[in-house]
Image 1 (cartoon, rainbow, N blue to C red):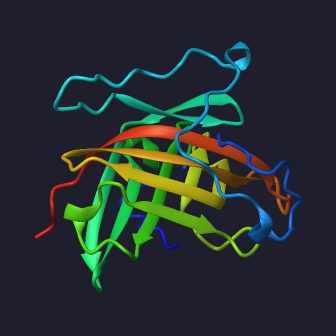
Image 2: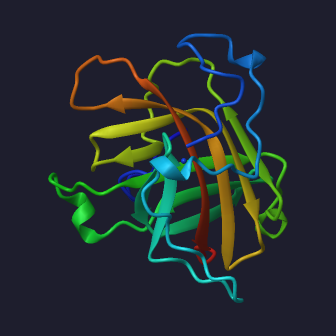
Image 3: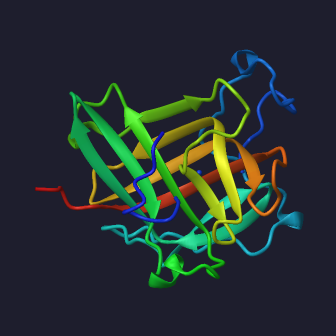
Length: 210
């Protein structure tokens, strides 16, 4: 996966299926994550994220939230770019970051996930589509895709991830559940920490590019 930095700095807690996974284990033997998502024990959660209105048309909330290791973390609002090329659709989920995100002292959170949907021909067929990603290695990849916490201090790269798209636009529900490796950029050569992530995101779809 390749990051288009011109879009933004970075742009996915999960149901940890099949028990704890050791780094470097054979991931092909694990059960697939299941959607819909479960809710973490309310005794260890902070306040729940902003509730998405149920009236139509749906409206993107000012913030989005992901459940990361059983704690809700807030992010800017979500956007979804849909690009059709080579007879398939690629969905790019990213946060609508504020101008301050380019500053070195920025401490906000963001995400950027580029998801090729090989079985989807174009944006009109995205409703119900799923993207499944399984890494062949637990080592850190040379990619800027993932979830970013505290500015760029922590990068969470997907290891085993399932994402589902529901709706027809101009706003889509993006539901994700999976396992990421959390790499602390402030510590050199530190191994990643296995991290569960899940979320139900309401994302505004970008207008088609001409």
